[in-house]
Length: 225
Image (cartoon, rainbow, N blue to C red; front, side, top):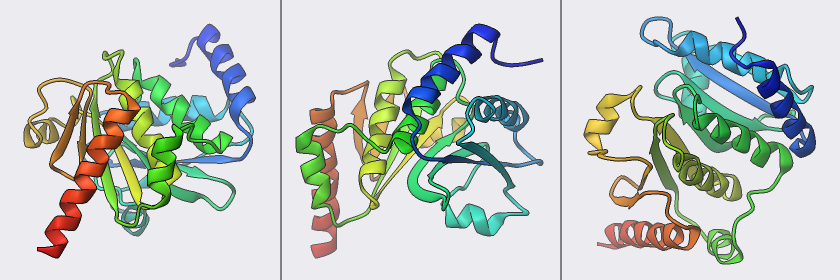
Protein backbone atom coordinates (compact mmCIF):
# COMPACT_ATOMS: atom_id res chain seq x y z
CA UNK A 1 0.00 0.00 0.00
CA UNK A 2 1.37 3.41 -1.03
CA UNK A 3 2.28 5.85 1.74
CA UNK A 4 1.47 8.90 -0.40
CA UNK A 5 -2.07 9.27 -1.66
CA UNK A 6 -2.78 10.38 -5.22
CA UNK A 7 -3.35 14.03 -4.26
CA UNK A 8 -0.11 14.26 -2.27
CA UNK A 9 1.83 12.43 -4.95
CA UNK A 10 0.67 14.89 -7.60
CA UNK A 11 1.46 17.90 -5.40
CA UNK A 12 4.95 16.62 -4.57
CA UNK A 13 5.66 15.80 -8.20
CA UNK A 14 4.70 19.31 -9.28
CA UNK A 15 6.80 20.85 -6.54
CA UNK A 16 9.85 18.79 -7.44
CA UNK A 17 9.44 19.57 -11.12
CA UNK A 18 9.63 23.28 -10.37
CA UNK A 19 12.68 23.27 -8.11
CA UNK A 20 15.10 20.51 -9.13
CA UNK A 21 17.76 21.71 -11.55
CA UNK A 22 20.54 19.23 -10.79
CA UNK A 23 20.47 15.57 -9.72
CA UNK A 24 19.95 14.75 -6.05
CA UNK A 25 20.99 11.48 -4.44
CA UNK A 26 19.38 10.27 -1.23
CA UNK A 27 21.64 7.93 0.74
CA UNK A 28 19.55 5.92 3.20
CA UNK A 29 21.30 4.00 5.96
CA UNK A 30 19.42 1.14 7.58
CA UNK A 31 20.17 -1.32 10.33
CA UNK A 32 18.58 -4.74 10.07
CA UNK A 33 19.30 -5.50 13.72
CA UNK A 34 17.77 -2.51 15.47
CA UNK A 35 15.70 -0.11 13.40
CA UNK A 36 11.94 -0.01 13.83
CA UNK A 37 11.32 2.55 11.09
CA UNK A 38 13.95 1.59 8.51
CA UNK A 39 11.60 -0.35 6.22
CA UNK A 40 8.89 2.30 6.13
CA UNK A 41 11.49 5.03 5.60
CA UNK A 42 12.78 3.11 2.61
CA UNK A 43 9.24 2.78 1.24
CA UNK A 44 8.63 6.51 1.64
CA UNK A 45 11.87 7.53 -0.06
CA UNK A 46 11.27 5.06 -2.88
CA UNK A 47 7.93 6.72 -3.58
CA UNK A 48 9.52 10.17 -3.52
CA UNK A 49 12.40 9.41 -5.89
CA UNK A 50 9.97 7.81 -8.34
CA UNK A 51 8.36 11.22 -8.78
CA UNK A 52 11.35 12.82 -10.52
CA UNK A 53 13.97 11.49 -12.94
CA UNK A 54 16.78 13.44 -11.26
CA UNK A 55 16.22 11.82 -7.88
CA UNK A 56 18.07 8.66 -6.91
CA UNK A 57 17.94 6.46 -3.81
CA UNK A 58 20.83 4.31 -2.61
CA UNK A 59 20.32 2.11 0.43
CA UNK A 60 23.25 1.20 2.67
CA UNK A 61 23.51 -1.16 5.62
CA UNK A 62 25.17 0.22 8.73
CA UNK A 63 27.25 -2.92 9.20
CA UNK A 64 27.92 -4.04 5.63
CA UNK A 65 28.61 -0.49 4.44
CA UNK A 66 30.38 0.76 7.55
CA UNK A 67 33.06 2.57 5.52
CA UNK A 68 30.41 4.55 3.65
CA UNK A 69 28.67 5.39 6.91
CA UNK A 70 31.95 6.67 8.33
CA UNK A 71 32.62 8.69 5.19
CA UNK A 72 29.23 10.43 5.47
CA UNK A 73 29.48 10.70 9.28
CA UNK A 74 26.39 8.58 9.91
CA UNK A 75 26.19 6.83 13.28
CA UNK A 76 22.58 5.63 13.63
CA UNK A 77 19.64 4.49 11.53
CA UNK A 78 17.48 5.29 9.79
CA UNK A 79 19.58 8.11 8.39
CA UNK A 80 19.08 10.10 5.22
CA UNK A 81 21.96 12.04 3.66
CA UNK A 82 21.08 14.44 0.85
CA UNK A 83 23.86 14.45 -1.75
CA UNK A 84 24.16 16.71 -4.77
CA UNK A 85 24.95 16.17 -8.43
CA UNK A 86 25.99 13.07 -10.30
CA UNK A 87 29.18 12.99 -8.22
CA UNK A 88 27.22 12.87 -4.95
CA UNK A 89 28.63 15.94 -3.22
CA UNK A 90 28.20 15.73 0.54
CA UNK A 91 26.93 18.99 2.05
CA UNK A 92 26.58 17.68 5.59
CA UNK A 93 22.78 17.58 5.31
CA UNK A 94 21.51 14.64 7.36
CA UNK A 95 18.16 13.54 8.72
CA UNK A 96 17.83 10.86 11.39
CA UNK A 97 14.47 9.12 11.58
CA UNK A 98 11.51 8.89 9.25
CA UNK A 99 10.51 12.29 7.80
CA UNK A 100 6.79 11.86 8.42
CA UNK A 101 4.08 14.32 9.41
CA UNK A 102 5.28 17.90 9.29
CA UNK A 103 8.82 16.65 8.79
CA UNK A 104 8.00 15.48 5.29
CA UNK A 105 8.25 19.17 4.39
CA UNK A 106 11.80 19.20 5.77
CA UNK A 107 12.76 16.36 3.44
CA UNK A 108 11.28 18.11 0.41
CA UNK A 109 12.91 21.42 1.28
CA UNK A 110 16.30 19.77 1.76
CA UNK A 111 15.94 18.21 -1.69
CA UNK A 112 15.02 21.64 -3.05
CA UNK A 113 18.08 23.25 -1.45
CA UNK A 114 20.48 20.75 -3.01
CA UNK A 115 18.64 20.25 -6.29
CA UNK A 116 17.94 23.93 -6.75
CA UNK A 117 21.41 25.07 -5.78
CA UNK A 118 20.36 27.74 -3.31
CA UNK A 119 20.31 28.01 0.48
CA UNK A 120 18.35 31.28 0.44
CA UNK A 121 20.16 32.73 3.44
CA UNK A 122 20.02 36.37 4.46
CA UNK A 123 23.00 38.49 3.33
CA UNK A 124 24.33 38.93 6.88
CA UNK A 125 24.29 35.18 7.44
CA UNK A 126 25.96 34.40 4.13
CA UNK A 127 28.59 37.07 4.73
CA UNK A 128 29.51 35.55 8.09
CA UNK A 129 29.62 32.03 6.70
CA UNK A 130 31.90 33.13 3.87
CA UNK A 131 34.59 33.86 6.47
CA UNK A 132 33.95 30.82 8.67
CA UNK A 133 37.09 28.77 9.20
CA UNK A 134 36.13 26.41 12.02
CA UNK A 135 33.91 23.31 11.82
CA UNK A 136 30.44 23.69 13.33
CA UNK A 137 27.94 20.96 14.11
CA UNK A 138 24.21 21.64 14.33
CA UNK A 139 21.69 19.23 15.84
CA UNK A 140 18.01 20.09 15.49
CA UNK A 141 15.61 17.97 17.52
CA UNK A 142 12.12 17.62 16.02
CA UNK A 143 8.96 15.53 16.09
CA UNK A 144 6.52 14.76 13.24
CA UNK A 145 3.65 16.49 15.07
CA UNK A 146 5.46 19.83 15.48
CA UNK A 147 4.35 22.42 12.89
CA UNK A 148 7.22 24.78 13.75
CA UNK A 149 10.01 22.22 13.54
CA UNK A 150 10.60 22.34 9.77
CA UNK A 151 11.53 26.02 10.02
CA UNK A 152 14.38 25.29 12.43
CA UNK A 153 15.44 22.13 10.60
CA UNK A 154 15.53 23.72 7.16
CA UNK A 155 17.54 26.72 8.38
CA UNK A 156 20.23 24.39 9.71
CA UNK A 157 20.28 22.51 6.42
CA UNK A 158 20.55 25.77 4.49
CA UNK A 159 23.57 26.74 6.56
CA UNK A 160 25.16 23.34 5.96
CA UNK A 161 24.63 23.73 2.23
CA UNK A 162 26.15 27.21 2.32
CA UNK A 163 29.46 26.22 3.90
CA UNK A 164 31.52 23.01 3.90
CA UNK A 165 32.54 23.49 7.54
CA UNK A 166 28.96 23.18 8.75
CA UNK A 167 27.15 19.89 9.23
CA UNK A 168 23.51 19.74 10.26
CA UNK A 169 21.73 16.76 11.77
CA UNK A 170 17.96 16.85 12.11
CA UNK A 171 16.95 14.24 14.69
CA UNK A 172 13.42 12.89 15.12
CA UNK A 173 13.73 12.73 18.88
CA UNK A 174 10.97 10.21 19.61
CA UNK A 175 12.94 7.63 17.60
CA UNK A 176 16.14 8.40 19.50
CA UNK A 177 15.00 9.00 23.10
CA UNK A 178 18.51 8.47 24.42
CA UNK A 179 19.56 11.65 22.61
CA UNK A 180 16.55 13.43 24.01
CA UNK A 181 17.75 12.50 27.48
CA UNK A 182 21.36 13.38 26.73
CA UNK A 183 20.49 16.88 25.55
CA UNK A 184 17.59 17.39 27.98
CA UNK A 185 15.11 18.00 25.18
CA UNK A 186 11.98 19.28 26.91
CA UNK A 187 10.34 20.77 23.82
CA UNK A 188 10.85 20.99 20.08
CA UNK A 189 12.27 22.36 17.97
CA UNK A 190 15.53 22.56 19.85
CA UNK A 191 18.75 23.47 18.06
CA UNK A 192 22.04 22.55 19.71
CA UNK A 193 25.16 24.13 18.23
CA UNK A 194 28.52 22.63 19.11
CA UNK A 195 27.06 20.59 21.96
CA UNK A 196 26.50 23.53 24.32
CA UNK A 197 24.78 26.52 22.70
CA UNK A 198 21.02 25.96 22.60
CA UNK A 199 18.30 27.69 20.60
CA UNK A 200 14.78 26.87 21.69
CA UNK A 201 11.87 27.15 19.30
CA UNK A 202 11.80 28.16 15.64
CA UNK A 203 14.00 31.20 16.16
CA UNK A 204 14.43 33.75 13.37
CA UNK A 205 17.58 33.55 11.30
CA UNK A 206 19.35 36.57 12.89
CA UNK A 207 18.95 34.99 16.34
CA UNK A 208 20.35 31.67 15.14
CA UNK A 209 23.24 33.52 13.52
CA UNK A 210 23.98 35.26 16.82
CA UNK A 211 24.01 31.92 18.63
CA UNK A 212 26.25 30.45 15.93
CA UNK A 213 28.71 33.29 16.47
CA UNK A 214 28.58 32.59 20.20
CA UNK A 215 29.37 28.92 19.63
CA UNK A 216 32.26 29.70 17.29
CA UNK A 217 33.70 32.24 19.71
CA UNK A 218 33.49 29.75 22.56
CA UNK A 219 35.33 27.14 20.53
CA UNK A 220 38.05 29.60 19.53
CA UNK A 221 38.46 30.64 23.17
CA UNK A 222 38.87 27.03 24.22
CA UNK A 223 41.55 26.49 21.60
CA UNK A 224 43.51 29.55 22.67
CA UNK A 225 43.26 28.77 26.41
